Length: 109
Image (cartoon, rainbow, N blue to C red; front, side, top):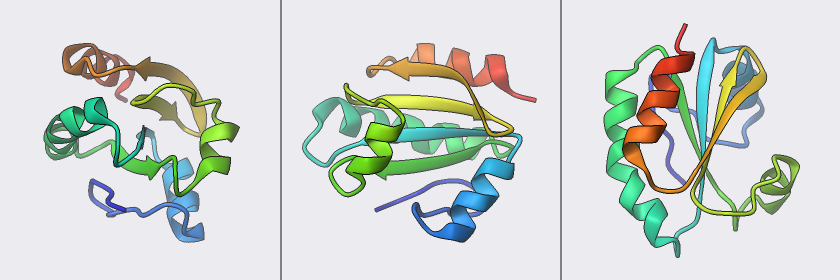
């Protein structure tokens, strides 16, 4: 599994979870290896991680961590959750790069 941004967080390590929830903002990318739209969004996620260095980006493979996907009620891929100081502030479902970028910018600190 791969993750992005400054801390190079890899879910589900305890340290990564603690650090991530303490972040001002993070984006959780729920994905799967078989998901074409997820693969389409990967370059955009890499671009966003490089551009928005104040935001943590975490990638979660729903096949590897089904319980986490269920906990966050992920039913469609790709799903992106925007978390701010431990609270879900927005959700983006689908492979629309521009809409996701708008949501990230809207919720930045």
